[in-house]
Image 1 (cartoon, one colour):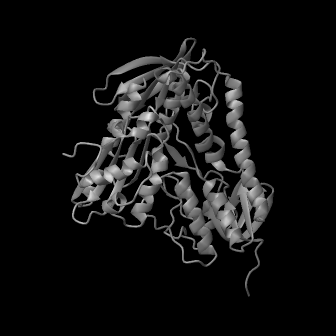
Image 2 (tube, rainbow, N blue to C red):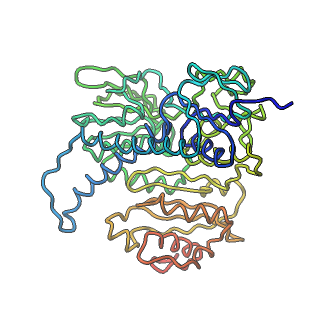
Image 3 (spheres, helix red, strand yellow):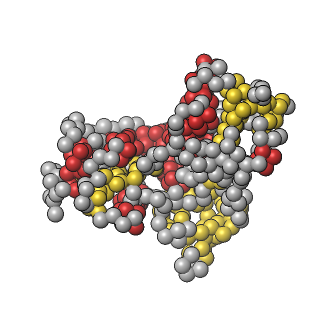
Length: 467
């Protein structure tokens, strides 16, 4: 006799991964509920990707206005209405999260509000009610990691959530602890808004995971804009005083310590899986020492009818990875032959210029035993980049020498994240550099730079000297 459950699928968490999973499962004819203790949309829509990009856009408009005189446009004195800026940003979030709620209704997904906690492997308490499900998808996401000695108060010492609320006046001095995606995106926002910004990174290089040449070009552009960058530097402690936050900085190599004063400090040293209150052990689900709930290629945990997706499942902690994994889990539950088999997962830093990559870096390709060749096309040779006044950066292509197989693409420049779509598709389709070079790209576009990089692999780029 088959046991009866309240739902075919219960999704715990309504972030990008969770709501994708819930909607796809419903599309496939399953009875679905999605539990969320805070707001639908998760970190990404509420206090992550979306509001950050809104502030980045606003800051870039300020920077563009400053440089408009270079081509004959002069504006009056710049003024910022901080309250209106914060309201505009929050309005975008409200519209998008409301859209997710509407999609739940349209797809007949039941939205349950409250903290979800396992009672057993088929039973979950959500707030004041208890529900059962044949299959359960854990999509609880992640939260900012803490740093000993720096207590976040969301005013003078903030994490990524607090940094989204732009203070009035804008802080004169800003410290970003962590030279990853989050650290640099906020550094870029506050720098454009008028802060004097310093970024520190414990490791020898910023933006780990990106190609070394691309990181070098990226940091050169950030420094050119006035952002100070110090690697192999750590923050030991912070003390709030009348004149600001006094932060003790230490040179990791020499041990030398100095104290610098800032008006706002961002702690952006990574994220950690969010499993607090989940009571996963009651369901027999394995949770690692680092808080992850591991899953296989079909997103199954060690308990076959319980799935794990997104940030809580594994690195990289990226919304688009979570979305894909959510679709896979839903389709597996519905009996489809699905699994997570992506060749490469793209990464982006949404500054200006953007830093974006997909596939292997040059060093990773060498470490894997490939004999490689590369093609680099500088945006200083791009007519479209010139018209945008954004010529910092390049497109770099990493290719297997003997087969011409594309292994990775790395871009520093305007709209790099948009250009990356072609590269990702090429990798998934096992395309060669010649395939890209033979494809007619519209002129004049930034996309031509991808074509030129492919031509540069064969020393045949038209608009640069081929060495």
